[in-house]
Image (cartoon, rainbow, N blue to C red; front, side):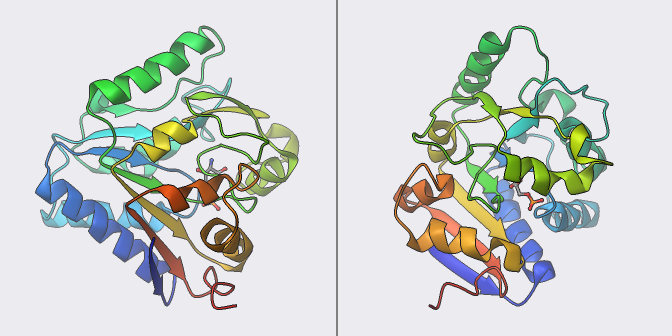
Length: 243
Ligand code: GLP
């Protein structure tokens, strides 16, 4: 693992954006694996700025998002569809039909999960996957479990994840209890992975992911087995690594 420690959130965001940009510049039809949450927001802002400066062109890029809440309408302001449009897609020249997000619909769940993995494979797999990390070590919505789940699947969210994500909703009761997530196999098949974390609340998860045992109880720990992972941390998120 290549671990980069920077001073603050802004530096982390700039570094992450520069890695994504170089990928797209070198391969204009890159397949990007994208994440939501508060962590990558600064990276998206930097990428939008770079696009507006004319430094990067997304017209041939494809994107696959990691996850989506289950049973939520696409237009709901809490959906990850809405998040991606508002924070990234509508500001750049990516083609709408080239952006993929797991289906949030209740019907045809098995089919929709299978289709998601098939379509990633059909496009040659993900060139670079951006990841945040949950305080419990989750990646995407792959929650701590007794085994790793490989494919795109329905997840029952853990109580600590529901509580952590409640900050985006007006009450904890509104947080969906289920989500569709790309599985560990789909994430590990990405050619390159960039894991981002900022703030003290992520320090323990980062320590366990980077230095702990590889276990499904800390889903991010599987990344130790990937040949090309860059971890970009601000000082707070990295604070336990020197111990
Ligand atoms: C969410 C998302 C993850 C994200 C994580 C951390 O539940 N499913 O993809 O990485 O939690 O979120 P944040 O960046 O807001 O701390």
